[in-house]
Image (cartoon, rainbow, N blue to C red; front, side, top):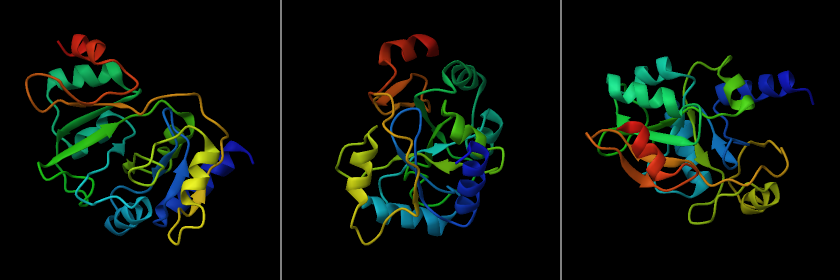
Length: 202
């Protein structure tokens, strides 16, 4: 199937409130419209994850990011250096998004991925997308399509589509950092080193 056709099909499914397993620049992910409360609730049920554990979102660019979170000059300079890439950044929420995206501390985790398919989706979809790994909660995220399929196989509630891009390049999940304080705080170690990010932020 040609790439433009895949983009068109996936964009339509997302706009219709569906949940898709999609390759990313890190591991396979579950993506859907992050502004659709009903769809986000369904994603949490598919993943068997507590709604109290918020998921991050993919955004198109810094302009879209500013619609949903507050960003000062230093934070923006940092984002321009690490995005697109494997760094998820937590910032204070500005615009209301569904429960499960915004934390109890009124923060949102965001990332611009470096992956052509997802970046092209944003040419059709002008809203953030969920950016959580495609696994059952408590089980490991994976870059191998067989592992992903097996986790959801035979379950009553499944993703609406699985995009099989074969096995992805080995990668850890994104590094998650909190930028809401004066100092950068690493919340989850991942694909990008803590030391490198601290040096960029200083």
